[in-house]
Image (tube, rainbow, N blue to C red; front, side, top):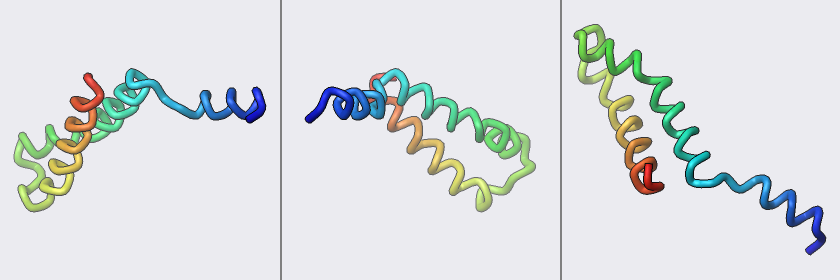
Length: 66
């Protein structure tokens, strides 16, 4: 493998810290929905899918040591 190919591959790999930052940003993007649910503006039925997705993000963050 050529040096330029190695650099390209290395630049495409995210560190755990970078992955955690991305996951936390994704989690933050749904914070307003969690607040709406807590305030009663979204039903359990409508929020369930969001809740599962948020938990999956938290699980990934925890696996990466965040």
